[in-house]
Amino acid sequence: MKKTATTLLLLLMAITSKSQTLNYANYSNAIGTTLDAAIGDLASFNMGILSINGPGSVWNASTISAQAGTPVVQFIFGQPSATPYANLFPQSNYVQYDPALTAFVGYDYLIVTPDSVGKAGSYAPSTEHEIYQDPDRSLIFPFSLGQSFTDTYAKTNYSDATTVSSYQTGTRTVTFSGAGTLILPQGSFSNVGLITSVRTNSLGPNSTNYNWIDLTTGMQLLYYAENDGDQTLAFNPSFTTGITFVPQPINVTVSPNPFTDKSEIKLDKYQPQTYFTLSDMQGREIRKSLFESTSMNVSREGMASGCYNYTISDDNGILSRGKLIIQ
Image (cartoon, rainbow, N blue to C red; front, side, top):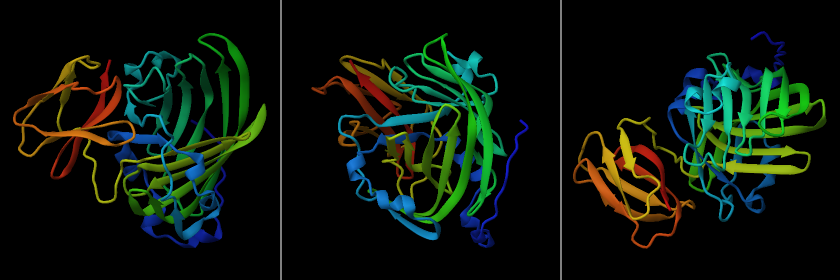
């Protein structure tokens, strides 16, 4: 992928601490994990943190809360071949989506390499979609505090499965603008980088994104975007300081799912002190049970129809997580 990129070395580039660089090795840790994303209530967000940048930054977002009635989305990095639209995005090697909520949340097709992360396109549940002829790069590796690059993109927008609505071109300028501590409701994260970007559009106004990333794990912690007056706010409500997420060390089968009366949770191996925890989409724990063998049954027992989060964990942390749907 030949691109024209301009790297601007700012004064802060003199600071070369390892904790102020996002490397591919660290970012790729997140590929094997689940990324929880709660839609934030804009009224609860401290807008003042958008103007904080540079080394030693402290971003206090401890007051943020989830939008009432909106489920927590659990994104995975999957293989495009596992989705219905892979043939539209032949350049893509990863797709980010929630397997349990494809009726409500679309697919983002990505190009992830040791050098960069770019977007190949997206496909919404409405069949509205976009295909990039020139991918939209949002990260390069390594990426250090004070560094910036500008990249071009070109895409075709479709209003449904076949109808072209527009052709768009533009640029994205991405800056590693801050490093320091991010405070979320569940605790403080001390090795965080703020990545900001401004994207131009040949047919419309610019858009601005702010993305706070844990530089050690590659996990996205907080996201805010503005586009022609529209605001988007999301945060990770589950990732907590000191917990290491292990990428699927056990295989879990949930059947049936969705279910009406009861479902069986089955593990491929049993180990003592393994727990099943069920929570609602606002993160409130509903029940917790200890596995006594490789399987257990979960009965409805008065729970309302809807989508629930489950985790399977032991004393060392989370072993697996997913969604359980009651019809």
